[in-house]
Image 1 (spheres, helix red, strand yellow):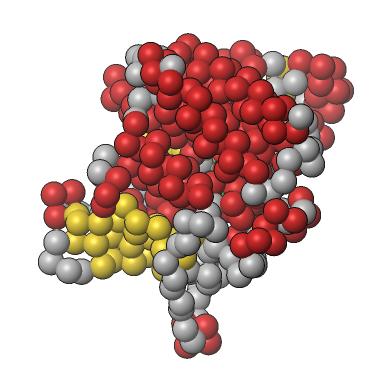
Image 2 (cartoon, rainbow, N blue to C red):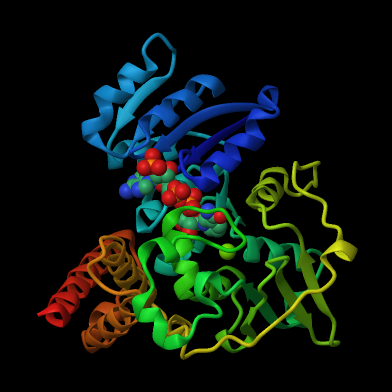
Length: 390
Ligand code: NDP
Ligand code: MG
């Protein structure tokens, strides 16, 4: 039996992971499930899967969680530290699917116990790529990508020599506003930004897809995970979301990963790696689909892509600044305090202001430093938004 834990079990990726595990319960011992606000779902899944412990991020929900688990053998816990402790429980495979920078410390704790970390939480690599990789190395842990583009690249590299790789192309659907007139973006509503043409995902990543901040983060994630120079990483708009990424080799070959837009493929690949097992995903009928289309991304429409290139050039803690400013701007957009197109303006302003404090950016990458810079960047983002509003 494989010991598995799911961090962010109540979210979109978490629920897709549970869907796969629940199909073969005899194969898995569930060590820990974690969630935040959705205590009812957390408790129901923990009971169903017979988890050792269920943890909510919110201290004030501990009693609710206890009540929902009453009569079962599942232990209940609450709080940020309890999530980190749950992540540190010995497990063979841990899914990192908390949303945002909150996923970093639990992911590091899971790596430190030495198993395999299936990484959906892209913020970990954006904020602290080098720290994630060195922690994995130190503890002999394995990091496997779950983000669909990175899973596709990873699969395209099996048996290949990195020295033969010329370029990596990650695709982007273009999100909700691909074909909108650019001047209309300032008027985009929260509801409009929260619906994705092809993928069913959590609200935050769906909005990030519309703004291309998601792809911007994935550019950084690609650089960190595969260790390729930024100039070799490209974004290609592909509205059908069927090709997830391509790897270009020095002999001119482009290996494309084609599959349905269903995260259970990438999750299942990471779950069963290095084997391939049957997965409950649609089999594509390409004759029926007929055609696939591609466009170059427009940096006027999606300034986030340009910002990601600047962050990759700066390196160090710039990724943590970028992510924190983006999270703060996204919070404000969700609260309907700023406009859709202002998110990129706020992030750019925070990057500019904080690059002046270059000692922060150039600082050593430890979890404490990342947390500190994250805090400062959120503060700065709020100050920028306040000055724009006033
Ligand atoms: P969701 O918003 O659907 O789920 C987020 C999960 O994190 C939930 O379990 C939520 O709990 C929990 N959570 C929220 N805040 C905290 C916190 N402060 N501390 C601990 N746990 C918290 O997100 P997704 O599943 O869409 O995304 C998860 C991660 O995977 C993100 O990093 C995203 O970028 C990445 N990803 C997602 C993809 C997708 O298809 N959805 C594709 C590729 C990457 P609760 O719901 O109980 O409040
Ligand atoms: Mg992705």
